Length: 143
Image (cartoon, rainbow, N blue to C red; front, side, top):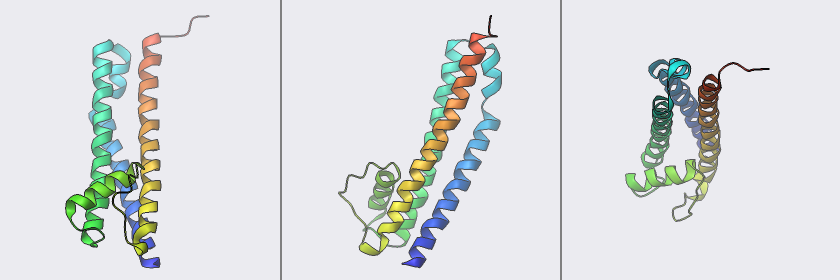
């Protein structure tokens, strides 16, 4: 059991690395702060669409990593089931139509908690960008 929990925490660490690297790439690729200063509604909205798309892509890479792990360890019958289970668990939807064997259940719990944290991180990042866009649009405060 301890080895499986150690695997779960290794996957957690890899998820955090992927998420941090992914958001760093987004910061470097998207004109997040330039758009805030001089753009209208359409460019700002397009920027938010791109940001949401990148965030979802990052999450999908992380989910795929968890799914590939479940498939590699033969926790579920096939790759499709493993990826589906990873999506349902990471997003904490938890349909319950697929479950892991008793010895692997703690790993699923760590995946769910990791998914919550990563979604929170993405939400915070999105909020910072959106706030900056709207504050820049309002201009300086008038007393």
